[in-house]
Length: 369
Ligand code: NAD
Ligand code: DAO
Ligand code: ZN
Ligand code: ZN
Image (cartoon, rainbow, N blue to C red):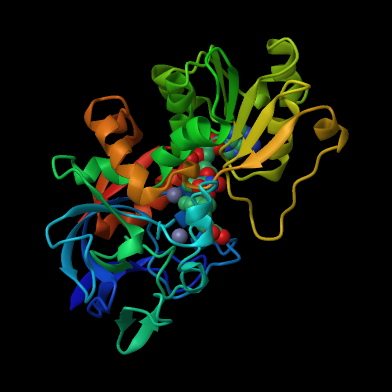
């Protein structure tokens, strides 16, 4: 079949809106009609060429809300008409990782997904007979996309897909990093570096976890109002101080915060986030994705003296079993998705969504098909 799509032909080039061919779902796969998709910083990161896994040409997009259009042979857990969220972190329930109970990083299709291919080693997308790669196993910048059954979460049909699409990445990532990865305790003090879609979601997670102080940190003060609206108790701009931001936070908090979250992808900020944690017990969670080849650094004594450095992917959330619960929380009004949607537009304007993100003018743009 034919599908409207935004194709990334090469790193650093704008996406081209065009028609692509989509092959039918094979065994264990489903064809989805994407109703709406968010645009996340990770899409921009890959498009920039900084992503070591970035392969071109590809159809980007990983924050979708969709409806099952067709199922391939052997699919049992999904039916045509189901409302779903595509998962870049699948959940097979059978691999060593799924069975460990310790991680959400299912590895069942990891090797092919990382190569931009379906589990059988081929792509379902092509243009004029030439294959186009999948992206993060989701490719939600195509109106029709094919996913393995194990990478699709079935959700409540009542939930608006043009809003709950944001639970496919950013909002779940931020909330999950606070509640699942850090598991903050009530009364904790928290610092959140970067107040984009991920950091603002971490603010929500910190409110849910009953943090006593939530310090938002961003170099763009335009983000402070919305952060405070969501529950940040104070916001600081590193540019306003002539000492390192970690020192500012240590001074503000009688020795440092209990938990910090890096939601930018900047290795220098990752160091600040670690070093603003309290001696003896402070934990810093890296959420941001740094550029290819970059490395983090701190003095080992920071860890010897009790600080903990950890990371979080998709908020530690197991997509098929836990994401439907996030949708229910959003339906109950506990996750204010509307606050995140600063812009809405059609697929034809998707490059504007990237511009708005780079200009710091959007939290999330939702693309409607
Ligand atoms: P975004 O661009 O919307 O937000 C980033 C924020 O950081 C902006 O508000 C910006 O002003 C601020 N910022 C930039 N440099 C700063 C600095 N030096 N100090 C303080 N603030 C600074 O991005 P987003 O969509 O919220 O994504 C954030 C990061 O999270 C990206 O690296 C993205 O790739 C990553 N991410 C990770 C996961 C995961 O599972 N680990 C999931 C989604 C996104
Ligand atoms: O299992 O080795 C693996 C990779 C899992 C991918 C998790 C990606 C999380 C960070 C990327 C940002 C997502 C938008
Ligand atoms: Zn994302
Ligand atoms: Zn698995």
